[in-house]
Each structure stands twice: as C-alpha cells, then as structure tokens.
Length: 108
Ligand SMILES: [Zn+2]
Image (cartoon, helix red, strand yellow):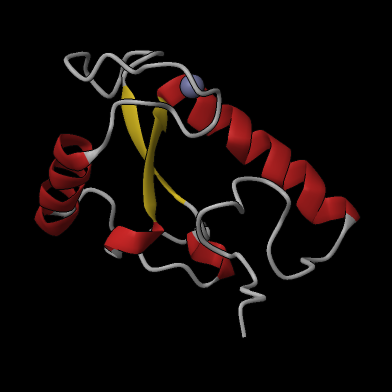
C-alpha cells in the first residue's frame, strides 16, 4: 500500500496555484527559467516541490517548504534523493537546495 498525501485535494490545487503564481519563475533545481504558462503535465511545466519531503516530515501545504521546479527536474530530484536515501541515512539537511532554508545560522 503506498501512502497517499492527498495531492489531488482542492486545498492542494489552490496551494499549488498560489505557489506558482508567487514564484520567481526560476527552477530551483537547474536554475533555468520555467514557462509558467505550460501545464504541470508538460516536462518543462511548473511543478511544486517540497524542500523537505513529506516523508521526511515536510508539510504538504507549507508555503516555506514549497519551491517550483520544472516537472522534469522535480522527478530528477526525486531520483537523486531516492538514491541518497539508500546510501546515507539522513544527515540533517542534505547538500541539495539547502542554501535558503535548512541553513544553520551561525549568527548567534
Ligand atoms: Zn529545472
């Protein structure tokens, strides 16, 4: 039984649309612009990704945990993360995309 996170709910659709409307149009994975007029089903269409994945405790509808990637980059990221997960057991903040959020602030 695979666990479903309710991505098809109305709340998710609304959330997704607002994250996309609000983003800067740059893919956080490859750094290239995303054509926001494309459908999310298009390879290069916008896809909302969770920075901290849901299975790692990230919240589905948390704005601070959402970023916009190309659909194709999102699946690439999932593949990389999947591979990493096998090798190293979570070290508290992967090296990927950790710039903006999981940053350990040393300013204390
Ligand atoms: Zn991309």
